[in-house]
Image (cartoon, rainbow, N blue to C red; front, top):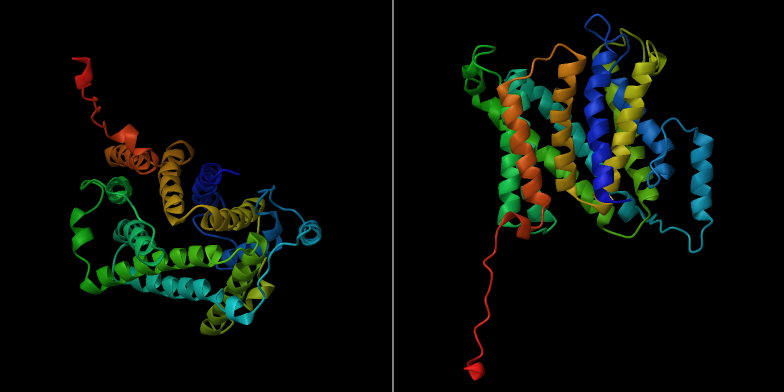
Length: 341
């Protein structure tokens, strides 16, 4: 499957996450424990990791997934699976980075408001490109660097509210700790993505086996986080496994399946494309979510949103289009042959 097809699917699924999450609310809140959603997503990704290449429909049973993996192992030659501990021990690292990142996000929100936090989150577009260049040694042209900066500007523009709707001074009135934590959060998010791409491409292991390792450790860390939250709350609502499915509706299950499927698409892009494709997919998803919210909810479109969409589309074209379509190269005229005179 071509990378741009997977990127388009990722954009659509990521866009629908916010919409499905909003639809799963009841009276402005959630009937279920929203902290269980990432854990369930990891479980579904673990169950369906055999289905990555075919991107099959959601909700297949564990038995079907196991049979598919068994068929892959029966092929000749069998898929490559590195089982040495020195390789497996690298796979918990993305989960550890994301765990630290989540705590940094929480700390950042204690210093800045949500609007400032959303705008600062666009820094990860630039930090991803920088780490992509530094650690993976991937060269980017000047036009591509300009496109990445434009993408960050476009997404930021679309999120900025008019001064009549909110105080414009709030963006610059937060303490220095908030901005430092925001930069750290952007760096951690980029580091997790770049490191995951490094893992996926460091050997010729089958993507299915790599997903098993990534998502197994992801599920373990999510369970640990849920248990820690229970300890902090003194088990007031009981252990997390007793309320795991409490209050779940069809929309809630769609949220879970959406998150799981999105993770599978991201792992495919990390294996066969790169982090920049993922960054563009998720950024375009944010804009698509805003556009869809205009029709589905009471979201009012703004001039900033329109300008942001235009800038992001220009950035997308600049990054992926052949240079010859962006710059008119001078036509070289061959000198006349002196022998003809």
